[in-house]
Image (cartoon, rainbow, N blue to C red):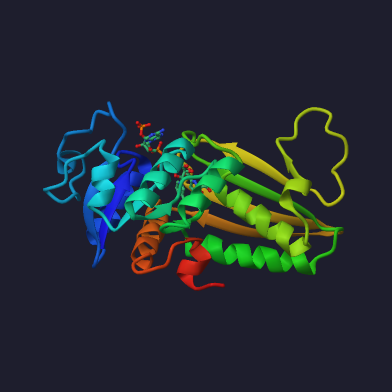
Length: 266
Ligand SMILES: NC(=O)C1=CN([C@@H]2O[C@H](COP(=O)(O)OP(=O)(O)OC[C@H]3O[C@@H](n4cnc5c(N)ncnc54)[C@H](OP(=O)(O)O)[C@@H]3O)[C@@H](O)[C@H]2O)C=CC1
Ligand SMILES: O=C(O)C1=N[C@H](C(=O)O)C[C@H](O)C1
């Protein structure tokens, strides 16, 4: 499977190069950065020792996608949406790990996925995708007297909040309760907020140091608190999930898939 990686100099891009190099059946076919980036035109192995010798970093997305079966993208929403449109036209599958999308971005990605398989997940780990199922089940079992709060913590460089994972967990809780998250979410409390709204699903974000990713879903009820927690201790976890998803895309029909499909959890 020929795999292109975009945003290759980023925290996830670097990790993906390592995981692709360790994965049987996967070959790094292209490495991308945006025009003007320092790495463009340089041999990737001079920056990342795990990279194959022949790969030179490119800003030519069309050439990179044409040379590849699938592209893995952990960048930023605007870059991801633009690349999904190119991938759809060229016929290259896509794995999207980027978070922080607005509704219009998702619509554009869904449109692209009518032409090629696109696997998109706010978290590529087995643990979080299992946890979403548990959260759905617990939310469905507990009554409205249990208040649901999602608390996440990430490194100081993270630019979006709540995290993609927190939103996945919030969605799962809302589904369990049979409500739309949009109608019950409560984000960023500050000042005289008034009492907690009945049925709200609250979000809180902590940013600091080099925390990889911590997520708690708290069910606070009468005289007891249930906390479901996931802790990531190495970004390799997400990269391994993304490469697994890339291999899974081979021969797949066009469609918008998620990690639950890849892991066979549905
Ligand atoms: N789904 C999952 O399991 C995970 C998702 N993520 C998500 O992946 C994304 C990236 O995270 P991370 O690797 O930590 O971030 P980094 O900032 O370390 O890397 C982002 C990379 O994308 C490039 N990039 C950013 N904006 C653009 C743009 N507009 N056009 C082209 N290239 C761009 C950056 O290049 P430049 O330096 O030029 O800006 C950089 O190479 C985030 O949305 C994060 O939330 C992260 C981990 C796991
Ligand atoms: O930006 C990160 O680092 C992470 N982002 C994803 C998210 O927004 O949930 C996944 C993981 O928590 C790391």
